[in-house]
Image 1 (cartoon, one colour):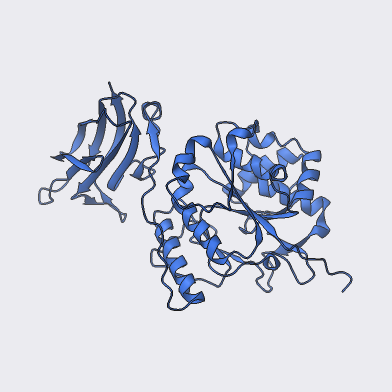
Image 2 (cartoon, helix red, strand yellow; image 1 turned 135 degrees about the horizontal axis):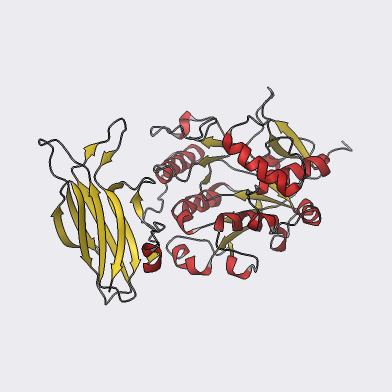
Length: 407
């Protein structure tokens, strides 16, 4: 019994969100409200300019909101910023241990501090051997350069990261974490932290080798993120299909991520409290997109656009017009057999039907009249009658060529 460590009574939760995370974040926060027994403070980091997005969802007053603007080291690259924040989290977090969560996490069973520790009170950290794949090697090269040492294992494959503030302080004494913001190739925060703890504070964690047979002590499960591709998508997956876990991790870029999170959460509450049907937030989150962003070819804030430029059946954006009178849309419409109906398009501005047009194969230019009396114009394009994607499963309506605001 002398070797048993005293478990913490509270564990704080750290979430670093961007503007595209808000729709998923609301379901994580609801799941946290339903199932978290961690007892600690929840810390949420956002930009002040994105607070209007947070105002569109239900956020408990108990959640501590921190603004990235108040961290002097922040840069334009928000992916690097979130890595940096994790490694200075003890500036804000006062508990010894904190759990790193993401907006695409969903708690589906009561989760307690002891779930993160073994029977002797030692926290779990997971690792496995390197498999040589390109994504892993990119992180390995950047992290080894940052640490000026060999990183013996992959310490970030299991999405269960419980950090210790004492180790963080020791970590920063050994490394200049500005490298997280500026070094190329890019290092990885949890990989560097895990390697440091493994080499310099080994007794703090119970190191679980994912490559060896043994009982599964992880409380997380990655839905549709299984190696080696991490892109195996199953639109029919439900909570009953996946192994038991305290929380599930969804791929935030998966189009069905939010829908599946909602389905899992409804099932989880029903499992815990039979006969209980909860109501979840379902309103769309509107992200402003500026003229400068559109002029630069930016697509952040646009909903209904595949990574390769093909539009979904519904294409939406909230445009901060700032005096612009027209939004010019260029679309490339695929050719089609004569028997296939022509693609049609409804244009809506602030929920009112502005125009309905039929699109011809080739380039189509549409000038959408904006309402100058409104600082924001919510544009919705609704497409009908696409063509089946050759060797794919999408319906192809049009490919976005450009969006250009005009005075």
